[in-house]
Structure formats: C-alpha cells, structure tokens
Amino acid sequence: MTEMALPKLFDRAAGAEPHAYRTSLCGEDILSVDQFDREKLWYIFSRAHEMREVVEDSGGADLLKGRVLTCLFYEPSTRTSASFIAAMERLGGSVIPITQGVQFSSVSKGESLPDTIRTLEQYSDVIVLRHPEIGAAKVAADYASIPVINAGDGAGEHPTQALLDLFTIQEELKAIDGLQIAMVGDLRFGRTVHSLTKLLSQYKVTLRFISPDILRLPLSLMNQLRDQGMDVREGHEVGEVIETADVLYVTRIQKERFTDMAQYEEVKDLYEITPELMKRAKPKMVVMHPLPRVGEIHYSVDADPRAAYFRQVKNGMYIRMALLAAVLGRA
Ligand code: ASP
Image (cartoon, rainbow, N blue to C red; front, side):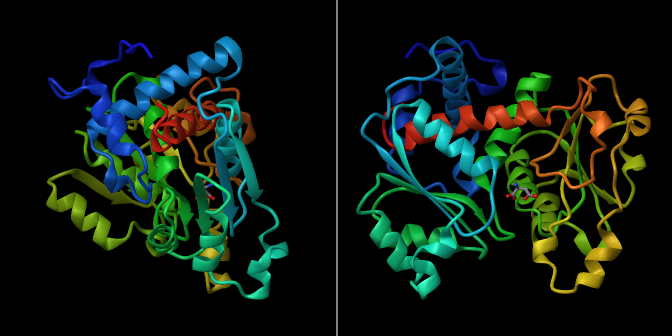
C-alpha cells in the first residue's frame, strides 16, 4: 500500500521502515495502551486513513479473506462489537459472534474463561474479548496462542476505544500537542478515560478532569501524570473548563460498577452539556463521548458541528480494520 501524506505529528522515526511497525504488531495481543508509542500510533493511524479510502472507494477489501475473528463479550456492547464485526467483514474475513448470548453459551454452565478461550481459539485467528473483570484480557492472552484484543476489562482499560478517540482528536483538530483536553463525568470507573489519559500523556497537552469527588481519576494514574510533569488539574464543574477546552470528552456515569445505588443516584445527573453551555465554548472545540450517552449531552447539541461523537463512532471501524490487519500480519 502507498504511504499516506500525514500531519507532522505522525512522522515516523528517521530511517524506520513501515515493515518494522507491521512486524512489531503481527501476532501481538492488544491489552493496554501502554503498548503504543507515538511511532506505533502513527502506523495505526496511517493505516486507518487507508482503510477509510478503501471503504469509501469500494466498501472494503479482501485482506483478511479466510481469517476468522471470535467476538466474545461478557458485558453489553453496541459499538465495540459491531465495529469489530464490520471491520472484519469489510476486510473479507468472518466472525463468530458471542456478543449477546454469553448466557446461552457454556459460560452459563460454569465454564472457566481459560477453557472458553482454549476452545474458541481452535476455530479462530483472533479473539476480541470484553469482560467485567480488570485483567481478564491478560488472563485470556496468557492461555491463548492467537492474539487477544481487549475490548474493555471492567473498570480497567479499553485500548481500542482510546486509539479511535485519539485518532478522532487528530482528525478533528489536525493536532494533539498544544491542546487542552477536559474529561467530564465518571473518571474513576470509566475505562475509556483511563486508556485515553495514558495515551495523551505521550503528548504535550494540558488535562482537566471534572468529576464529583467519589468519581475522581484513580490516584495512581493522577500521580503518574504529575510525576511526568504534566499540566493537570481537577475540578467539579464543566463551567471551569468550557471556555478553555479544545476537546470536551464527556462520559457516562458507570452505573454497573456501583455497589451502593444510593451513591449512584446522588451523582447520576450532575452533568449535562446543553446548547447554552456550548455558546461559551471555543468555536472549534470538539465534543466527544465514547457512548452510550444517558443524559450527559442534550440531544439538541447533536446539530452543533462541534459534536463529533458520531464521527468518532465511524473512526472506530477504520481503526479496528487497521488493527486487525496489523495483528493478523496483513497490513
Ligand atoms: N462504551 C464504553 C465502554 O464500554 C463507554 C461506556 O460504556 O460508558 O467503556
């Protein structure tokens, strides 16, 4: 495939060949964003650009013909599962979808995760796993001899979402360095926040975290950012960041992670992005959300050109096409 002309941000290291990136992802598990440095990000983003062209030109390609993906989801999903399925099918591959019916599989008979994984790998070339427990993807990867991609492990990480989030920021604003990114909502349980924050810590950005006290970013992650010398600040109100933010990354309060429902009731309606609030934001500010939204962004904001969350969804498919091709050695 031809090399794309990309913004400076994604310039490869001098002298490095694309082949090196390809081979470094081939056969790899994708468990955490910690696996991605700026060079690997450049590689994935440039391939995602190509995937967009392929889809726009001809709907897809035969790059993964004969390859099989198993989508194994122990938690609900719309976008992540559908976009992995779409990505695989647009590249000519096929999918074993265990996305809505884990309760109808042998899991409901008490089968362990390792046994389920060691079974499904007999049929497939790559497994995409979502699981309610932090670290489950790592456990699966330890047992599997084929690549495992973490599609969300409890309140841990969601690396492929973070890749598409970062790609969206780049696509929308044509840069990442120099931006102020404000994250709003459930920063404690929101795995997309954890992964995106870690990726952003590789850039010269300022980070603002807006949440109620009980949903602050985990201290270990905050300390990591501070140790790196990053400009980070926490607050409680969206009004504190609405005029300065370049990106407003809004998240859902993760009801399913609360053990005390009274606490959830206290915080569930704290934030709502409205057209009135948007009037105070920069003309080029971008509103993002990993979705689903359950009241954090008023529907009337959707018509605002700064609302990027559905473009973000589409970017997810291109990123996952790029990732599947890379992991399966067919970039
Ligand atoms: N879809 C995202 C996730 O799976 C965000 C959310 O559920 O709120 O983490």
